[in-house]
Image (tube, rainbow, N blue to C red):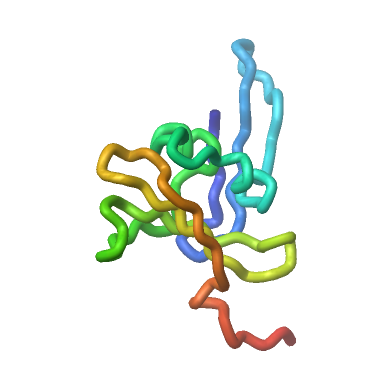
Length: 111
């Protein structure tokens, strides 16, 4: 699996899956509402999230969360500038998914 990201402020990550012969099997934009909905709370792990969504834009720590929180910027329903927070426990298991507006893009006017 190969990962192509736009960097820390990007809203897309593409995952390319290659066959054993090196040929491209699929190429998919994975930072979507549908892909986030496929994450299984209390089952998915940091490893499975990396394989599904790629590397996060940022890793943060909140006092209210007993583990890492990975942040992913994306376009909610392909329209709204959003941020998905994937919260892990100390063992690296997903405990919650929380989305909201992307604070770095709030208040920007379209031109």
